[in-house]
Amino acid sequence: MDKRGKATLAAGGAVVLLLGGAGSLAFWQDSTESGGGTITSGELALSECTPVSGSGWTDDTNGTAEPIDIATFRIVPGDTLSYTCTTVVSADGENLTATLAADTSEMFAAGSDPALQARLIETEMTVTDGNGAVLPNAQITEADDGATITVAAELTFDPATPDQEAQNASVTLNNVAITLTQNTNPAVAP
Figure 1 (cartoon, rainbow, N blue to C red):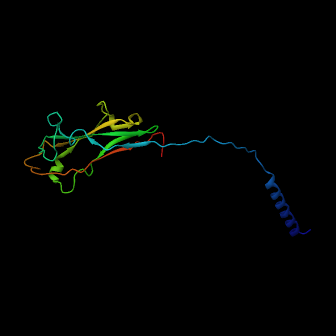
Figure 2 (tube, helix red, strand yellow):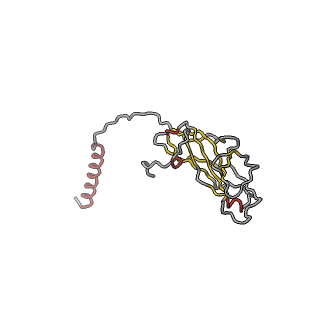
Figure 3 (cartoon, rainbow, N blue to C red):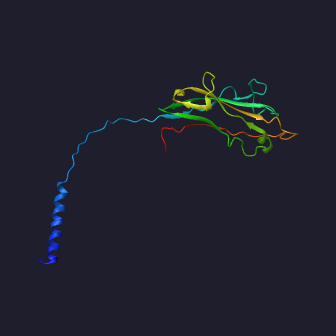
């Protein structure tokens, strides 16, 4: 037999071996079913923030919260005004934590006097539970689900306002968004 015939015969034998081997190779195998179930998501929400009394605004300058009509009150340097409202928290979910904050980025409406606006100092928002205890760092957990919380924010007219700056001026306040944002769960890395 010549070399070409031997090569053809060898190639044909290899194909037969490969085809025959493809069907005979097997590993053990088995299957079972895992338990099914229903997964239900939780909830994170706030009800509408309701003013504590009247308009929600008070004059806190002398250490007492005196209700005021914000439209007729004439603020002077050193005065501190507060807005206080209550909201009901819906916080339902395992491992749920969230932070309450106020978005004051658009607090002043267009057309507000820039000198007065610059002299109104925002202080940190205070969040208290139904018993009046301050919630550290405005943190909400599932334990607060269904609780009524109080949110208070202050504006102080800078007592160091010089000369006659910001006199006979006005600012218009927009509604301030109070946000409740879920915290990142450290056990779940992105």
